[in-house]
Image (cartoon, rainbow, N blue to C red):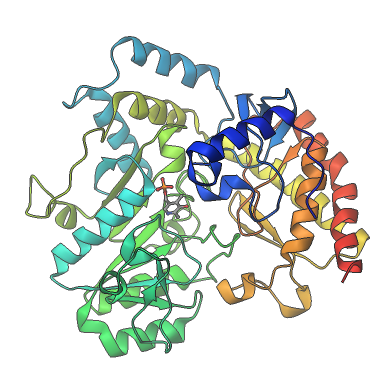
Length: 443
Ligand SMILES: *Cc1c(COP(=O)(O)O)cnc(C)c1O
């Protein structure tokens, strides 16, 4: 169901954009392909609200896919960035801001050394190269439904058997790029054990989202990350925990704060992005000092970046992390709990089967049957009713609520989501649930 366009300026820009950019967007999910309709072109944002080029306002439940933990145009972040801008935007030489941000990340996470890059893709790509360089091994293990950026070797589809190598997940990735990748079902200990039993001596690393958010939120079952860390350790492989989404977001200490910090283990390598850039292109990978010391120029594993540690991006990230106190996470948790409960109540009242899942402050609503149990892996997530989600999405958009334009994404809040923003969502939910229910009647 594609609703009548209600955003003529966005429509006009989308038409122009498609003439000069594939699909009219610079990252596919923005195109609304999964829900239909015209993407809104955003003119400005402040706090919890987005304003599109037609002047429509929306409560933002995406927060730039996670980064805007403090809301948009936060005055203190803005002031820090403005001051940095006046001092020049890039030097290609080290700066104090890089040291301060690295110290902040080393303080707040189990990593001992950190290297900055410009995107999460670069962070995981580099972490895998380092893991291979450190171990002298070539095989990598990932989970179906976990997204780690568009790294060739990780755009992989599961092979035909559990311990068989992957095939390319997209045209443009050669067989040779995925021939050393094993793709396993998430939360499946037996599959991990089988893969390590068969290929253990060749496995350089296992990479996982610390809590998957890129197939909707599918939390690790209790002890799963610890099991992964221990399995890697016992086979001489590195455990790479991708916290690009969850870092400084799922909790103040990321997903690691919810399991590793409590259970007393730590990943060998971690990746960060999104929140740590405060809305600018900044990401990082880091970990054990002995592993990180293999990285160029200290060690032989090459890695570099012209804009890595950019002074504006690091200033924004540092300001954001310094403002990300326990109060911020408490606020986001409370606002999220209110919205989750209201969404579930509205969907229950409308008779729409659904499952709400969380990882710390992140959550999403799956349009799956609760009788089938929780969503544990990508196969479960794939059962979500995407037509019901699309109707739900558009009914909310018409009522000033901007959800992720895909059923397989986390919903994100910020410390700027105040009572007015939350109430706008609550007021819109019953009609959206009814719209989702109507699609079920159609079938
Ligand atoms: C967003 C994301 C990435 C990729 O980051 P980009 O900055 O988009 O390249 C990698 N891993 C995870 C878990 C992510 O959520």
